Image (cartoon, rainbow, N blue to C red; front, side):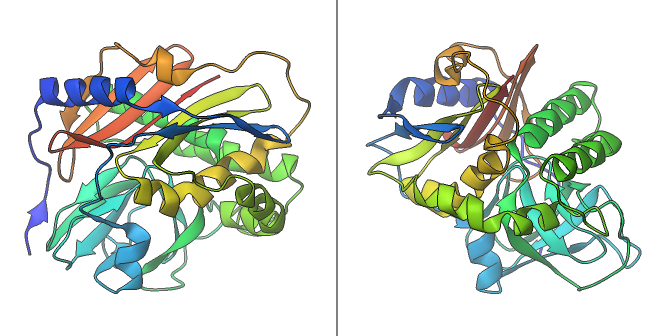
Length: 313
């Protein structure tokens, strides 16, 4: 089983693929639930996903995520994929167990029958003690404002030629801030405890955003403060990951007073920008944009934009 360090991807091919898909997707009618607005993004010509999601692969026992060693190393985890298909791990994926809970720093595609190290950030400050040998997936991903900040931090680290790392202390502060705003006490400073406390209310929000035919993503806006885009290459991927994405926005959508300002259309703003492209640690290329209040990142594999996400305050 080979150890994966990253494949060289074509910069021009990746940029062309992103530009093409941003022009191709279509907006559907916006849906508003409380402080959260979603505009579905449709792509009638989207493909069938040729990969497994992390949840699918772990459920069938073909992929495990574990500490890189017995002692562990906070910003890295080891992924072992024994499946005959690649496995897609989305930016912000929340992993539970082992020595402490982590979130994934950037979207990656793990090749079939391979091992690779992924970059992660801790979201459970008060624990460094092994609970399980392997991680399990959470029904949530990193909350939207935290993910926006982490994405910008990772892009800055990569731009300086460093590993794709976030500012660990800043992420801990953001988790602590969310816990205080949502009035949740966690003995270990765990983000999962915040989502667990509010699971019933966020599940009700998720239920009001059912996927529509050909939907591959959405434009999102919470409280008129943070705007975002989430885009995948296949309707099935959006359907599987949508509940986590919506929960990551819903947990903050009732957080403070509404601000009466127009939402930013990131689908329009991202058209024609110049992306910084580098080889991904797994298959394909990683694309980045970090410009003022706007930050975005994408994963392009074999000319297909598997995932693109962006945020603007």
